[in-house]
Amino acid sequence: MATTFRAGAPAAIGGARRASAFRLRQDAAGCESVQEIIDIAATAEAFAVTLLGEALASVERGELLLNVEVAQSLTAARAAEQAHLDVLLEAGATPLTETFTVPDPALLTDPALFLETLITLEEAFIAAYIAAAQQFAILGEAELAQLALQIGAVEAEHRVGVRFYAIQRGTLSGVPNDVAFEQALFASVGEAAAALEELGFIGGDGAEITYPGPGEIDSTGVDNLQP
Image 1 (tube, helix red, strand yellow):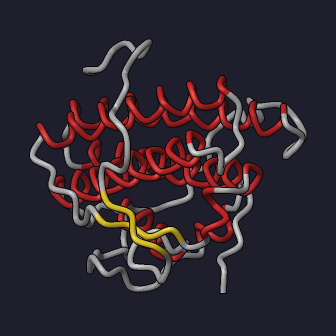
Image 2 (tube, helix red, strand yellow; image 1 turned 135 degrees about the vertical axis):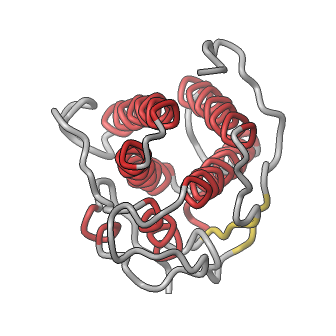
Image 3 (cartoon, one colour; image 1 turned 180 degrees about the vertical axis):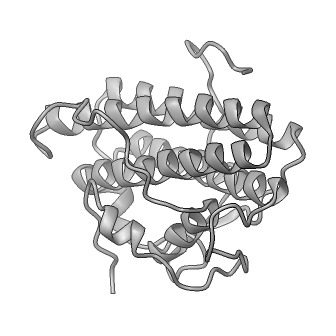
């Protein structure tokens, strides 16, 4: 059965509490090591790069009907996600997987579904980095806490950008910058990995996609590629 996605689905994400394939402990804040956190973060960034690559390829084939402005924004976002991954790898991270799944093939052909799903994913990534910053602070890792905030802030920019395009095309209503505080959906970073599994993007039944996905990473117009 196809997974149903919608923008702003904190209940679906926050309710993802099943045992992770990565065997991460999720029962208490502060239980994760630096290595666990950065490995999960690297996995999420690799997934983002891959999914955006697949989406851009679908746009190029004329299967996902997004305009040039949206495609340019997604290209820049993909470059940013790759920059995040590069920094995490430099810090010693190892992605837990580089193979992901697309739970619903319409995700890469239906503009409304794609944009709504991307908003939901960005909200999950923001929440994951909020949890990471807290964990790093508990562990006394000030530089990593700063890095988590720097990355999380960019994920929030991505969320607003995607909401703008979704509102512009009539998929959503309201304003792009619709929150005063981002939602802290997860008590641990491992819960974010479990959410991706629950949504069918890791270890799901859909078609497999592999990092980095099709096409070259294009960082044209993207500054501050290092923190």
